[in-house]
Length: 505
View 1 (cartoon, helix red, strand yellow):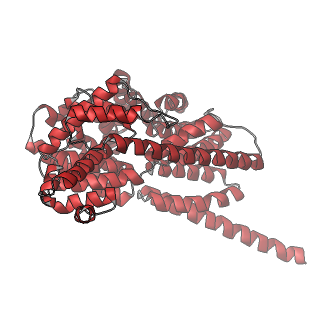
View 2 (cartoon, helix red, strand yellow):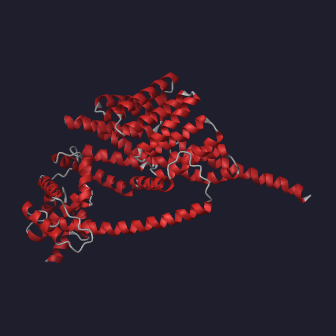
């Protein structure tokens, strides 16, 4: 009798758990469709163990797919990869070619976003093979779009155009208007890379209104950023206030969209574009956007996530199937060991960074001296640094590079303008080349390097020219107003300029 009563109770409990799993699963899907990725992840991670417990493999695979895309949108690439590979494993067990192609495509897209295009190609070419088996034009077009992005990231422009043109043709044949616009956005991005900026802007101008009306905020934000950057690049050849103002409008709209979507990576791109576009139009507004950009950059873990992904590859491998049969206890033990090792490495990196920072500040002292005196101080600082375990000696080419860099920065400060792009151009380098070389030599980003020079110049003027007012010193250091200078000085030295004068006097 007890067994008879117990059976309905167990059945009722099982049904209740299954209903809860489905409710969470459906909620995750709805949040994902409305591009509220944080909420989608919360619901999905609650649904996942319940779906596994109930053996609902199809729904589990779908949830893993949603989680992987949401995490990718949030720049958590290592986490996205784990979900995507778990999804692919379930898809392979099902034998469904379309599902397998879909999850392989997702894995490839994550590697593209994490700046590992060669790994991405391995998965995407497999995805295309499975897509061809399905005979689905929509699936083939999607995969061709991903392959086009990957080839583009490697500067294989002809291959990228070939893939995206095939995707566009298939979307037109299927009458999929929304997807067609996405493919056109991808093609416009490739055209920007090939230097055909005017053609790219015309495509963006034709598809941006469509994304606005359909509410595809993700594609809209990306297209706005790309169109804005293309307009900026066109202004390098022939200055045009109208183009700059259009770029400002595009970047500003994108930044608001990305903030609402909690998409920090694309918001950071929009803020950087705003700073660059506003620099010659409204320097004060440009500085506000630059500060917003720096705050986003500091908080954004895009680079950290990419580095974590690289460690994941080294430790766990990138085999497509990932069908190893390791017990959870061994896996947890391994993770703990890796965590301890990474923690020790992080501590060592912090210690080394502090030593490099101290050396850098020593090199930057008294930057307003003549260049000959400055060079002598550098050589003396290097020669007397015998006590350091890492001498970090500069080559003659490095010394010459730093001397020229400081000379140009000093000229820019005297003209009350400091611009990294112009600085790189004066050195006959691209901005990225200049950034990499300066960071390799000094351990500082260009912005931090310029800030150091500004602050050292300010301190020198405070020490040697007491007749100058705080405002005059601020102007000589490239600041437009006293309050901005005071805040920057206090952040750097921990004391206001006025208090610094009082203390020294």
